[in-house]
Length: 196
Image 1 (cartoon, rainbow, N blue to C red):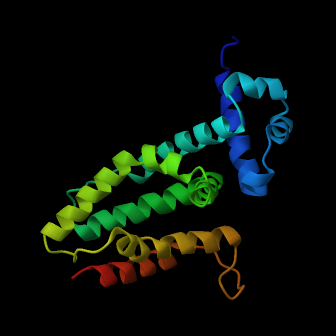
Image 2: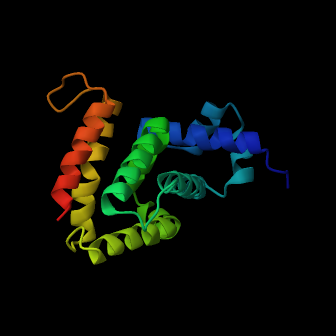
Image 3: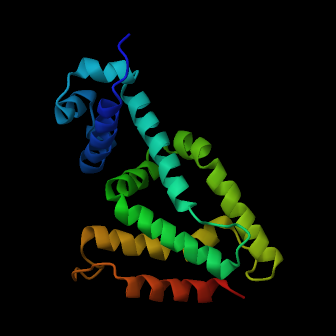
């Protein structure tokens, strides 16, 4: 068996994400990926068992990498306001600096791969954020609420702003670029909605 060429593995991973974002999971094939990478299809099978194995490995590595970025400088013992602000900084930076990865992982949420990827990789992420929430509730900074309710209020506005930014337009079709001012104005509204 031939040894793995790490540069080639990185190229395959990047091109796979780009192609999946561009054409979706249904249109994605090993042949199309090999062509994008300018390598033979046989080379792909040195690294991956099949298309599903490739997608899962790429998705799990990328989900873990992005989760780690989102936890940088985040202290689950911080006050609710400080911790949520750090999460917004990390998430905005993560998505804006890694647009292909962010779009790829967003597509993954609605795919058949979702459970396998998110069920195993983001465990540390869930534990850390769960501890942060529990601390904020115990300190009386926020009311207890369902995770889905919390996420919808705390992060959906940020993800929508980033989506508008990636699309280059707002709901009405007007040109849109995410600015620091818009980001932090939205954050202040979210913080006001969640704090007691």
